[in-house]
Length: 246
Length: 246
Image (tube, rainbow over all chains, first blue to last red; front, side):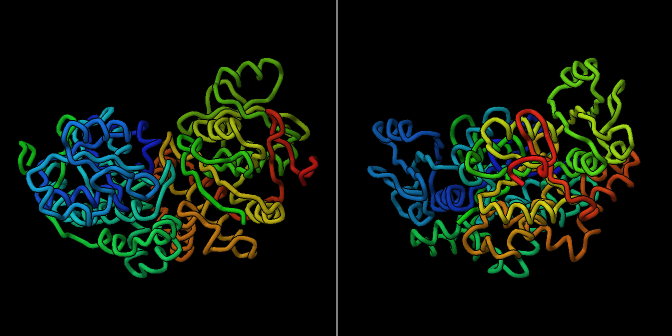
């Protein structure tokens, strides 16, 4: 039977055997929420890159490019990593470039030895879960975390996705859920009962709140605003619907 | 104010700034439970080593040596990593050698850039917490995990210790508890309400249960069987009471 596991940081992802698994990269505040939003608003593809320099080089070649470091937009770029930056007509049909503190780094780590890499967020969780269940493969949920540390919102997403996968019946709680996913799921169940209790004391949320990102936080925690599932083909994220894996 | 953080695996420990922190290494099933038990039963010191070869070399020099790999005692050694191996008269006043799959590896990782490293388990949690509170320093709880992955029992210990530290009032929930510790604490609170719910489906517990280690599991989850706090001085763990840091 397939297994569900969670890697809470990119730093320890290499211990997972991802060669025959589907890896779901998430960075809830805000990279993967922004990526899902961009596809919902008509982006054709996105090129995640690890460094500011790579992003700048591609921008000079004519790409629209987004860049975020330490939760702020980097000067000289077209977008930051707020989902609200990726809702305009200017992105329709375009290939965008994106680099962020944690999210694009996680994608880079996943690329090293993974066959199938998709992008998850609360915004596309049900479409993603439905597709994953149909694949009947091991799932590794790779959280981007915050500079090598576990964070709350990515863990909650990992728990929410685990729960959706189990509810379908393909994966069983007793045999297919590793401790890593079990922890996330219980955390999510607790948060469902009392979301404020957990999130109001979150250290990363405190960090974002100081930057006046309350609207972004609310948006990134919204369920199912899109059915798009971004998937990495080569070096580009594209809409799963345009590929053979749909 | 001092911070409380949790590193859930040795693999991402290097991102933590542990130079001015006290690092609490734990490997609940079973290395650090065995270490605390050995000190309670009169061991003078323990030398944690990373490899079987190092342990064997020291054993040849006359040390009593314990070795565990994949939850089983390695042939030719005096002990495995069951706490029950470390209760006999034969260890009184002795310096023992120990190598385990995850626990001694975590100690090695911690040694790279930490000033103060102590050993934690449920067996010494209250004595440890009381001493930590008196130090008024940042605390990093380093879980050994299972082969690079987060596990349930070490996470529960991290949560239990965080909770004890907060209850004293020196550390505040709103400002001093990072997401990593917040997650552990909520997990522990849930487990307190319904311990069976979490542990009965734990993948690592399933692994140990297959090896007939139910007695060990029960023992390792017992609170406060000892006041000993093993601390690393140079390459040896010794009883904190015999040092200047007591």
